[in-house]
Length: 214
Image (cartoon, rainbow, N blue to C red; front, side, top):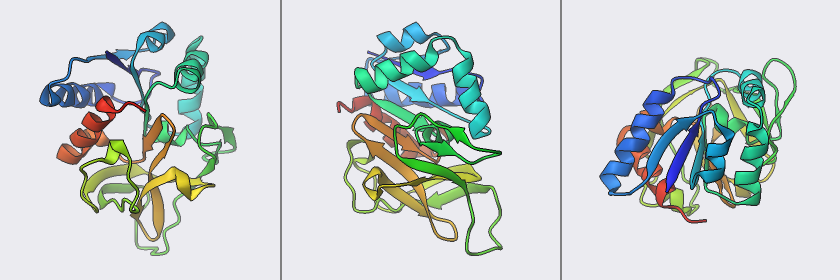
């Protein structure tokens, strides 16, 4: 088994890789963690992670700039149904459309639009940065297994994915109103927060993802 964290020039991937390596070790799993920009590695991987730091448009452009990566991602996730995890902007890219600095098409895997945060409490700062509670919405999902309701996780974002169907929303957080924190459908899951920065809760979620067999 191997997990590929896609390297398309978005953010510091070493912290994500170290978190996945730690989760593998603590769970006693035999999984190789690889950071790669090679589309062929996606075809050989058992699990795929798409991180993302920065703007929606830049992340989408970075993904498309790697020859064959978009096709390999489509093949691995949609055709071969490999377990997929999108993190932060990587989760937002799962949506239909992003409205950050213009209109930009997403991957279209989760019906919804990525919109700017507009908290009802105007004293709340943008970006939403720091620890916040998750509301698991009474939804069971294997990747969330064993997490108590309202665990604390770490966010850094100014936009969120407004899903068309609430069935795709596995967890929310409150920041002057509910915001999408976890989405999931079929073999895909995405987190707006950063599991790699969320200490024990993040490691538990990563471990669940690595054991997940959708």
